[in-house]
Image (cartoon, rainbow, N blue to C red):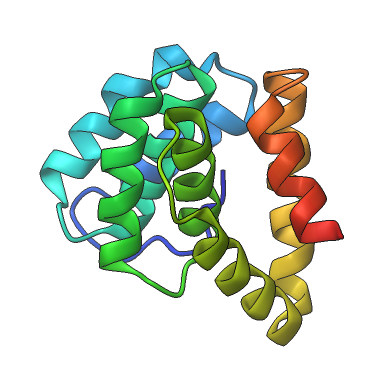
Length: 145
C-alpha cells in the first residue's frame, strides 16, 4: 500500500495515522472502516481509494475492491498502485481488460525507476500478508517478465 500520492485534505492526518497503523502491521480488516471514513470525508483523494481497494483485496472482497479501484484510477490515472489494485480486482472477479492496466504500469515503471522499487515493495508486502495470492503472483510475473 503506497502512501506517496496522498493529497492535502481534512482527512490527511487520519490518512497518515491509518497508514502508520498499516505499516506497523495492523490487520487489514481492522483498517477498512478507517479508510472508508477517509474516502467519505475526502472523495476526491485518490490515495484513500487506492489504499481502501488494497485492503479490500487483502481481505478477500474482490467485488468492492473492483469498484473502489476503478474510482482510484478515475481520480488519478497515472497512479501505478491504483492500476495494480484494479488489475488484481479484475483478475479476481474475472473482468476483462487487465492487459491495458498492466501495460500502463510497465510504462510508468520504465519512466520512473523509483516508482518501480516502491511497487515491488508493495507487491512483496501483499504476498507477505496474503501468502500464495494467485492474482498477485500473476501480476508480479507480468511486471517482472
